[in-house]
Image 1 (tube, rainbow over the protein chains, first blue to last red):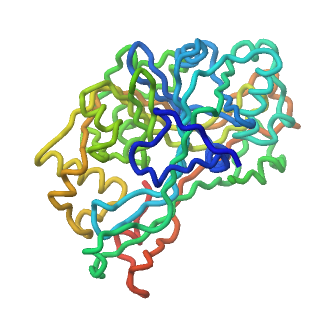
Image 2 (tube, rainbow over the protein chains, first blue to last red; image 1 turned 30 degrees about the vertical axis):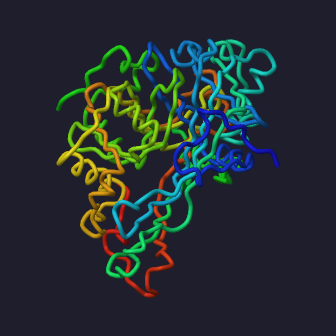
Image 3 (cartoon, each protein chain N blue to C red; image 1 turned 45 degrees about the vertical axis):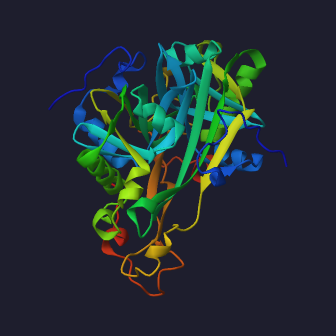
Length: 217
Length: 217
């Protein structure tokens, strides 16, 4: 099993025990989450925006309107940071100081590249199937005009780190006998509700399997 | 009702109809979400990290270890971007191009300031009560040593924008009669599970009300 390649900016300087250098963990986080936060520097200031994405092997694809400032900037090959976070639990400790969160987060650094031609269509496929699996075959395909209006970017998973906090709270030795104070974890889950058809879908039309059976991994 | 103060970097250049300039919307997004993504520029590169936070009026507080690189950098008064995103739904359109997400996101730009003394304690209170309301009174208080090991930062909600996409898919006129293609929304929800006591909590100890009844707004 391959490990991640830490560089100074992808190496955790705090809580090293929370760094998972296992590439499978990286894939799990990226595949389970629904959206990422894309960070870049625009006019000298950091900008962080929520964005859809998808993963194929060691490539992350994301897309946006060809006219969007952040997408145009990223397409010019500037440094980006893509962060994906899954919040798994609220950690109540006996001391306030040890309150925490259970989470899994992936941070990917690199320069995104604008993809074209066949890889652009593949990137759109990967992003579509990440968020709405089954839609690529079910829905009406992208026209040439629609394809021109969207930019697809690729980011290699070369410089990445995963940070995980799991399990119960960690309390101080002096708090272990303070049984009047509760400690534990409240799990946090993301769930999907019942599909709501658009008003222009005929009444009684069945919800297709790929929507009805959509599960979060 | 006050409105947000758009500046060039907080003004949306795309999808202006999704910009909600209502300050109440900003408060709702910030109060409902559990974590934020903090972006800053370190050694010329963007870095985006998931972080806990809390809001009091028009101030956002967040904290971290006094030794953490991102917290030290933010404390020096450099530009930060704090983004909070609530994913509300997966939007299936009849065309792939109109697939989307329902979401609410808040983006706050500014320079964070390190807070000390009484405001530091107040900031810790605000961050604690955002994620684990009730813990401030229930859990063991912060000692002077613990307080020294944590840095608390404040960010004014002066330069902020809110972007919201809600409701059903928007499809093209030419797809309105394609009734063989489904369109609609699959809601996405964040829910809390049953509290799990730490192994060092005596068996049968009751889960306190503030934990048992914790609700997401």
